[in-house]
Length: 159
Image 1 (cartoon, helix red, strand yellow):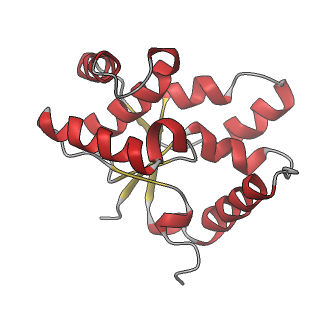
Image 2 (cartoon, rainbow, N blue to C red):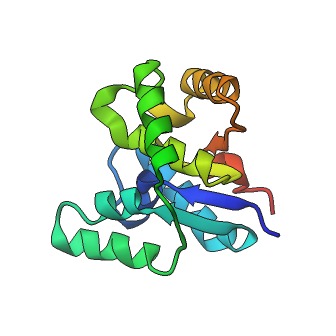
């Protein structure tokens, strides 16, 4: 069975937004496009209602593009256990309360047993310090965390 990748909202946003003038962001956008075109078929992609809600917000034309990319992806269920874990991650200071959806992404991918959570959210999810805190907390709670990664870390350039 192919490894399961939870697609978080930043991935879809990078696929649909205009090329950034910021060189770092533009590089991330390019890597994301390459991964989506060349590597995604090697994985089973999943997402959640949280991603659909976030992707559907904002400019109507852009939200239609984002939602079109998500169409057909299986949704991991947001259960009571998911909500409890997300709240616990916020209470433990792992994810700030003001970005509760980030805790929901993390809890959904964890409870749903995704192998990877792909994101460009380096501040709260995939940055080295955040990743370490998240992995430690989830393991202490008896969960095996998904590997938090960017498209670059999941194989672009490794063909």
